[in-house]
Structure formats: C-alpha cells, structure tokens
Amino acid sequence: MKIIKGKDLVYEYIKFTDEGEAEAKVRAVDGVEIEAEPGDFIAILGHNGSGKSTLAKHLNAILTPTEGTLYVDGKDTRDENSLWQIRQTAGMVFQNPDNQIIGTVVDEDVAFGPENMGVPVEELWKRVEKSLRAVGMWEYRSHSPNKLSGGQKQRIAIAGIVAMQPKCIVLDEPTAMLDPVGRREVIRTVMELNRTQHVTVILITHYMEEAILADRVMVMDSGKVILQGTPREVFSKVEFMREHRLDVPQVTQLAWELKRAGLDLPDGILTTEELADALDAIRGGE
Amino acid sequence: MSIQIEHLQYVYGAGTVFEKQALRDISLTIPDGQFVGIIGHTGSGKSTLVQHLNGLLRASSGDILVDGESIYQEGYSMKKLRSSVGLVFQYPEYQLFETDVFTDVCFGPKNLGLPKEEIEARARQAMNAVGLDESYDKVSPFELSGGQKRRAAIAGILAMKPKVLILDEPTAGLDPKGRDDILDMLADLHRESGITILLVSHSMEDVAKYVDRIIVMSKGSVLYDDRPAGVFAHWQELEKVGLAAPQVTYIMHELETRGWPAARDVTTVEEAKDAILNALHRK
Ligand SMILES: Nc1ncnc2c1ncn2[C@@H]1O[C@H](COP(=O)(O)OP(=O)(O)OP(=O)(O)O)[C@@H](O)[C@H]1O
Ligand SMILES: Nc1ncnc2c1ncn2[C@@H]1O[C@H](COP(=O)(O)OP(=O)(O)OP(=O)(O)O)[C@@H](O)[C@H]1O
Ligand SMILES: [Mg+2]
Ligand SMILES: [Mg+2]
Image (cartoon, rainbow over all chains, first blue to last red; front, side, top):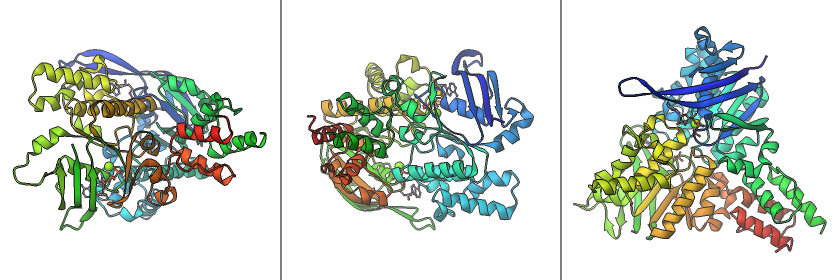
C-alpha cells in the first residue's frame, strides 16, 4: 500500500476582511498528485510561495484539501477520527524550530511527543537519548531550548520527531539555519532513518545539493508540480530550473559551464567524483 | 562608517547556572565601505556579535568604537546608533508586526521622523529592491510564505538607509533566484553607495562569491580573518569547526590529487571554470 496517495489536491487559503467576510482566495496548491511507497525519499523544490509548505501541512493533516483526496497510510486525512493516527504516521519538522519547541529543558522537549503517544517511561528515555545523539545534541540535554542558537534549536526539533519513530518524516527546510557540517549531519541522520528503518522521507529544501540524495525530486511552481524525476533527470535541465527560480548543485553548474565552453561532458553530473572522472577522460584523450 | 571592536567579551546569564560565555576577547576593525562575511558553526557567537554593533546587547567587557567614538560613553545616543547601523535579524518573523507589509516596511523610516512622502517613497524603493511588488502592500505579514517574510524584513531595514547594514543569514529560506537577487542587490548597493555591509551566512558558496573579507568565528573567538581564498585554504581546519569550503574548492583539490595542476585559490564556479580550461589549454 502506498504510504502517501494524493489526487487532484487543491488548497485555497481564504482571506477575510476586518468584518469577517471572505474576501479573496489564494490557490496555494493547485491540482497536485503525490504518491510515495513506504521507504521512498522524495525531495520537493520550488520557488518561495510555490506551495511546498502548504502541501507538506496536508501530509499530517494540519490542513485538509479544499478539493481532491489525500490518503496517508490508507487513512483519509479529512476523516477526523483518523487524525491521531495520521499524526503518528507522519511527523513534521517545520521551517522555524521556534514554533515547535515546547519544553523548558531539551530532553523534556524531545520526550514530549512520544510521551503523548503513550510510550512507556523506560522506552521513552531510551528513545530520547538515541535521537539526541543522532542529531549531536546529547550534551545539551539539560539546557534550556530557548537559550540555544538557531541551528541547535533546529536539531532539537528534529530529535523530537525522530523520537516518535513515525513511518514518514516530513521536513520543511530543516537545514536552512545550519552550518555546513550540521547540514550534513542532519541529512545523514535522515538518510540513515530512510535506509535502515525504511522511514519515508519528504524533504523540502532550497539547497540543491541535498536533493541529489533523494530517489525522486518534485519541482513545484505556483501550486503545481511542473517537473518530476530522478535527481539526474531534474538537474540535467539547468536552464529550466533557473527559469523557475531554482538552481542546480555547484558541481552540476560547473560541468554545464564547461560543456558550454566546448568540453565534451555529459549532462546531469551530480558529484565531484563524476566530474573529476569525466575531466580525466578528456585530459587523457588529449 | 568604521567600526572598531576592542577586547569584546559577552556572557549570557552571568551569575546563573546557565552562564554562558558567548564571545571571548574579540578585536576587529571594520573600515568604512567593506563588504565582510561572517561565518561560523551554529552557536559560535555570530548573532551575539552583530547584536552588539547596533546596541541590542551590551558588552560584558571591552569596547566598541563607531567612527572613533565609544558607543558605551555617557550620553551616546543609542537611537542614532540604531538608525545608522541597521540589523536584519536571523528570524524575520520577529521583525514583522504591523497589519500589512507596506505599513511594516514604513515603520523604520517613520521612526526616523521623516516626512510622509519620503517614508513612502523609501518603502516602495526598498520593497522593489527585495522583489515585493505593490500587490504585497496590503497583505498581512502572517500570510506570507517563509521566503516572502524574509524579503519584507530586509525591506524594512533597507528603508532606513543605514550606513552600516548587517544581515544575519538574510538568504536562509530564500529560493535560489531570491538568494541571488538579494545578494546581487547588496553588491550593487555596496558598489554604488559605498556602505559597509556585514553578511552572516552559512553558505560558503555565497560568501566566497560576494565578500572581500571573511571573519571565521569558532566557540566565541575569531579563528581566521582573511580574504576568501585565504580562509578556504584552511578547509580541513574549517571542517573541524563545523564549516567547509565551497563545493568547487573540493573539486579543484580532487583534480589536484589526480595529477592536475594545483589551483588552490579557487572558490567560485567562474574561477574553477577558468582553471580547468587553462589546464586543458582551452584558453
Ligand atoms: N496562512 C496563510 N494565509 C493566506 N495565504 C497564505 C498563508 N500561508 C501561505 N499563504 C500563501 O500561499 C502560497 C503558498 O505558500 P507556502 O507557504 O506553501 O509556500 P512555500 O513554497 O512553502 O514557500 P517558501 O519557500 O517561501 O517557504 C503563497 O502565495 C503564500 O503567500
Ligand atoms: N539568550 C541566550 N541565553 C543564553 N545563552 C544564549 C542565548 N542566546 C545564545 N546563547 C548561547 O550563546 C552562544 C552563541 O549563540 P549565537 O546565537 O550568537 O550563535 P550563532 O553563531 O549566531 O549561531 P547560529 O548559526 O545557530 O545562528 C551559543 O552557545 C548559544 O547557546
Ligand atoms: Mg515554506
Ligand atoms: Mg545566529
């Protein structure tokens, strides 16, 4: 069974006047199909305001579709009786960690989610330790989350979701505030959950390098999915991506520029190794 | 406007169990008109440092001189300081509180006591600079997407026309085009008006491309202070403190280990392209 199955999804925000009358509608998601098998790793790219966060909020039923249907692990997200189960299936890490930090001490904050799910105490603290270690914040367990730096807070928020052991994790720009090593660690943590425990991962990001690790990349523009494919397929389209306010990883861009300057390089080079191999081949042939 | 930081120390929660020394003996001189990048691991003290420069935080010890005058001397006007040193916060949500975007962007210049036409002209210009057109005027800041909020927050500070502009991770959360637009806009502003710009960033690629000088913070101290190529030559040390070099720098290192001519100064795509074409005698 598909863990996520969304068909013809539409979402409209309704704006109200000061008098409380509906004034205007913003179609933030406009006819999206989204499907994921358990264990899939999907990256979603798209310009600011393209509807990524709005779509993501549907996956754990914070929002429900204005039109169309969405099933998460077989449950209709519009069915209020399934809300609890859907939230346990799909954990969400938001764009701004401040909005999701609740506890006054780091480990209590991380324990909050699983505790609410009724995880027994002994198991609970094991999970808290494991997830704090996974994000490299175990040493901060007795700190106050409010006094941590931006990036540190973000890792606590991720630990809180990891501790709930959901089947699916939706991450909405989880690395936007992290340093390069922190970014790599978070992505590695997420990849590991994906590879070893087959957690389905939906990763929204503006860092193109992070999307190369996904099985599939979805590109959104004005509420619609305008391109979908493997990272190589998607990042082969350098000009298309630029036209839609996006980019490609630096190594892909360099390869593309070199190709335009006359070098015989393939499209969609994604890693340093690939580029170096291709360049070696050219140099060897001279 | 020049800034001189002398032996700056800052301790959060002094005397409590959560006491935390965030800045240790920082001394830096930022001459008028420089475009400076500040990088450092999360929690290294970047935000703490820049919040001192417009008086939001007060040093535990040490001094800060703006155009040669200590901002801690008696009678120094903090209000004046804040109008000449503009700071765009790391989380823009905290900076947006008016009922609509246009009013919000007007807030800063309004506080400067400018005439209404001037306030509105500046707000319009600032919104244009960050790519928010008139259709956003009446939108509530709470209805904006993450990236749109950030643009609005930057516009609010730009509208005050500060002499020193400090941006704490202004491009986090922006789409790549928006990121390039904002950084290009800053580069233009820097070239045309000669203002001093301090850019705090987690994107090694961005600082490499735009700034003249990079200050590297680690655990509350300054680790390196050099031009980009000089800083990224320390890529191995940088990785130990949470950082990295731009991806192209790694490509050039990889090529060097494969017997290509060394090109250790490369930190941008443009430079890498030239170095590779040169090595292949295609230039
Ligand atoms: N609460 C809201 N009320 C009204 N409109 C909204 C609301 N939240 C978002 N929107 C609008 O819906 C559209 C999609 O927003 P969304 O937050 O999903 O974009 P996004 O792709 O996540 O963008 P970003 O990359 O900036 O985070 C935007 O035009 C935005 O202005
Ligand atoms: N209000 C506070 N109270 C106590 N400690 C704090 C407070 N704010 C920050 N700190 C601590 O001070 C240190 C420096 O924090 P700062 O926010 O300056 O880091 P930063 O370099 O800006 O990090 P980031 O890249 O994550 O934004 C960190 O260890 C942080 O935990
Ligand atoms: Mg978003
Ligand atoms: Mg900071």
